Length: 336
Ligand SMILES: C[S@@+](CC[C@H](N)C(=O)[O-])C[C@H]1O[C@@H](n2cnc3c(N)ncnc32)[C@H](O)[C@@H]1O
Image (cartoon, rainbow, N blue to C red; front, side):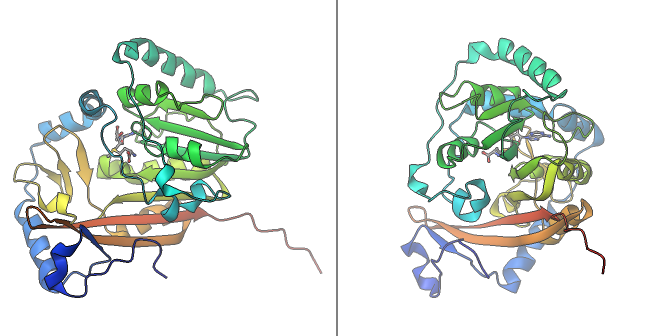
């Protein structure tokens, strides 16, 4: 059954400019073929040295991004709790009440970076007084940016047993989370962590997380590193725990808009600011999650037509949403 993606359907093409967005739009075969052609025309990869530079300095490019934009980006989270009720299972929802994150003081960066390094090094030796050790519901957000998911969770989910871990490999982003007035170290721990570094410790034990959230972050990794990263994360889930993902889908407008000279490998591009993005199919994500030992709960494509009524422009967005679960422990069979 289709979930909560919205219910405004375009049945008469002449009405396209009557609203700002249409849900669940069907693509015609010609449209799909033309998107494919466009992608092929722009699939000449950049030279290896360039590729290596973008990989080696990936977190610096994201630091620069957050230095420029601070917390003025990625604000639309109206869908968060309708699509992912696992983030606040016992709560009655009021999507309009989600907080917006606010500013931070840049001058604290050095001391915060030092503190974060110490934090995680110490926490990886987790013991009974480590943050969240007594929690009964643990969520980890990876690639949390400035906290546009974390703060709404803390605000909406009032379960006293909740603890939210969140990480990003951009120390600038983590600093913005930690200096946000809504940051509560009693309920939340933000730390610097590179998802693609599968040897690095997380400050939680394997088999202890109820939910892992990946929102537009897996697409920022080099495709060769995605599978191992998902496998590493899957180990952190409890039996019955879920991984939630929302990310870019193949032929999203953002993919079709890339100009020549931005392609790194098939369906993987670098933006003008040095940050990178991959565009997934549902099958690729299914493969990745199931290879990591998880089972499908949901794997959907959300196709939306956004309209700029002023400029009379149409923009076809394609997002993929997945929920994959670690198998719950089976009760032991009794003999006889
Ligand atoms: C498109 S932003 C999305 C941010 C946030 N999830 C949101 O939706 O607002 C991608 C985020 O992933 C982070 N990121 C990219 N590669 C990462 C990696 N290897 N490890 C951890 N975080 C990463 C970036 O720093 C950035 O904050």
